[in-house]
Image 1: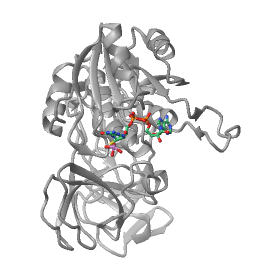
Image 2: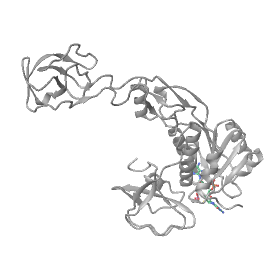
Image 3: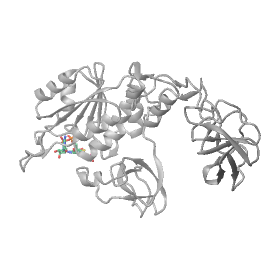
Length: 395
Ligand SMILES: Nc1nc2c(c(=O)[nH]1)N[C@H]1C(S)=C(S)[C@@H](COP(=O)(O)OP(=O)(O)OC[C@H]3O[C@@H](n4cnc5c(N)ncnc54)[C@H](O)[C@@H]3O)O[C@H]1N2
Ligand code: MOO
């Protein structure tokens, strides 16, 4: 048996075997979660004219002024404002030609058509200049960027109805184990409701994948082989469980029988050591360990980046954020460890429970603290690298 490889080497070898998928046109309203294949270019200028940022009066020169009309959002004043004149204006309405300052309603004294100010408005104040946000032809988002809800709004505001994105990856998740039961309401005491498929399925969907789930599959080679055949042709197959060295751990032997090419097996991380990466025809295979926390951590560290590269993400690997430690951490062990932690008052507070089957502690964790192998003791207040996992009270 070969020794587990370091995480960085595992990432390098995994990323090297993934090719991004093809691109297609997508309606912007369906584009959230998709990754741009081409930059998003503005097709209009925003704002289209100088606009008022406040409700009040667009004034020319220092007051007092005479009110000569109104400019509303969507219905601009079509005259010119000359010195000593003003028009009523609403937020988002065009500032008429000649007006050089906005007097807000709260500081206006109106008597009939006469207008004075309790506070003299500064020239230029509360005016949003034409094109200050973006101008037609500007690149607003780069290829490789995932479209967020704000990105969708930007695409619409910039006059785009479609964009070019990579196809969403098709991912099949297979969970295996004789002890697993699909229906949590119908689970005898000596069995276990399957939970990893649902958890990893939700993570994959959130990452933009089209998810199919198979299982729970019995610990029989023929059953597992059949599951792989059903998933054949997908972009990615993720198995959970059966990845270790027990007599019933069948993922590796079945993949070998199917003629899959094993890229590596076992990574020097805790939890998650028995991770397997292979390729079967054009399909990538990730074999995640079955312990639920191990499944989650390897899902975060390997499945999501794989989906990220397939989807076209420019930066698929998780980015650590340094967060000061609450309390201290003892010296690290021989395996690089991902410790669950809560975010409390801006500090990373490690959760005592480290067992890789403990789902309650996982569901309470906001963060994974990345502890290098043989790390020295970390004292209270030391910034430690953390990955945001959004499970806990701050999700
Ligand atoms: N002799 C050794 N034994 C084990 C080693 C080792 O190096 N030598 N590694 C341990 C580590 S670390 C892990 S992690 C596990 C991984 O085992 P498998 O991937 O083969 O997973 P299983 O044995 O099938 O299951 C482990 C555990 O998780 C539960 N499980 C599995 N699938 C699901 C699911 N879909 N939903 C909920 N829970 C699931 C399963 O019931 C087991 O309790 O191996 C160690 N052993
Ligand atoms: O490495 Mo296993 O994933 O700890 O329980």
